[in-house]
Amino acid sequence: TVGLPLLEALALEKPAVLPALDYARDLYGDAGIYFEEAAEQSVAEAILRCIADVEEARRKTRERARDVWPGRVTWAGHWERFGVA
Picture 1 (cartoon, rainbow, N blue to C red):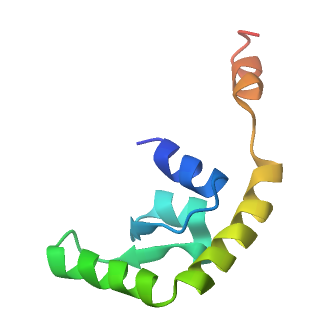
Picture 2 (picture 1 turned 120 degrees about the horizontal axis):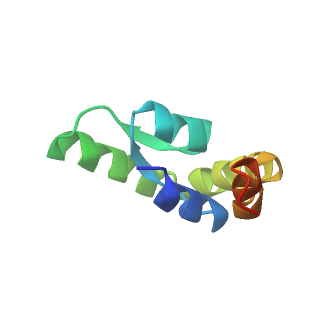
Picture 3 (picture 1 turned 90 degrees about the vertical axis):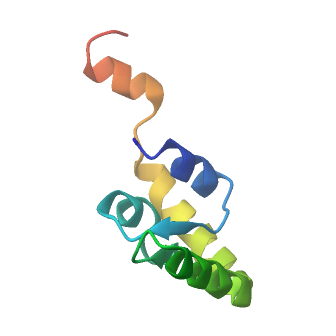
């Protein structure tokens, strides 16, 4: 994955339950609610943590979105780097 669903969720300032993998942590930082194992119990626990503290998750996600978006390269910027635009 190139993280597009995560970028979309972040752009919409939505909390996310994510795998504890580098790409997810790079995008969501401390705002993500992470599960360690690809197992039902681990995912379910992360979902329940998100539900239990959804307002805090929303606050952290809003803050993360404000921090991340100004430094992101636009699609046009990516094409320019490849000399296409």
